[in-house]
Image (cartoon, rainbow, N blue to C red):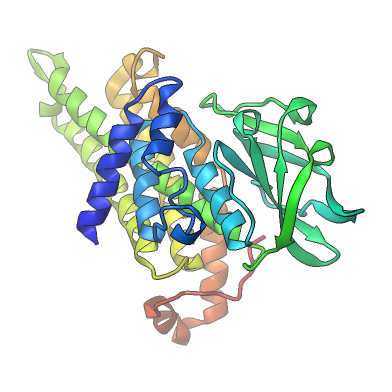
Length: 343
């Protein structure tokens, strides 16, 4: 299994080195955009660990494309028995709150409501929407574009758009076979995987800079104070990566493991970015330096699909619900499914 994941990571890295318009074509040709879709439905049939490994490499390569969103939307559609079309996809809602409404409209369907902070909506050809249909959970697939999208951005200059759902043409819809929280949890794991890769890259850039930058006649990495900073940075990166690895190793998505992974990577994002910029000095803040490609994504992604405060709070409430006597058996169980709902 480790050899297969190593091959996937190598394939992903090769595809992601393509630039500009060639990038998305390279990702599609490598089969990465459909990795989470079963083989019988035209996908690669990657398991949880495989697609987490791909997204970790994507974060390490700082790609500017909706790979995670396309994989998540494809998973939602395929799980619901709907077609996952080729091209760039996105999903809604991407934030917590009331679900949009879905209703019958003659022989077809109609969505209503506004979805905010939708990743890459302006570049997507289709959107997977989790909606409420008369008290039942449905997934709808709709075309996207035109006047339905109001552009917005996060601080990494990635599209985070507002979408008028009532302006979309719904192609098909079907009951969702998963819990209402499942897409949010999978989104949290996707962001954690991307952040783990970005954290790896920040660590490597910082270590390299410490060996190259000279001060008082020797590399700054020779100074004890800098060594301590880099050691603390590396410890946070290692802890975050281990949390993501643990979540990816589960036989099926486990809320507790995903919560730990997202909480730990989001917490590490702020600490690691601050230390890396301190070590790099003013150079790291410039657009010309590669460091800002990662730190701006880390600052943005830590907030998406729940920040560290959200997930630490949820973990605390989960531990309280299980109780002192039951916490260790719960922690050691194969699938840590908690009855504590997300909020």
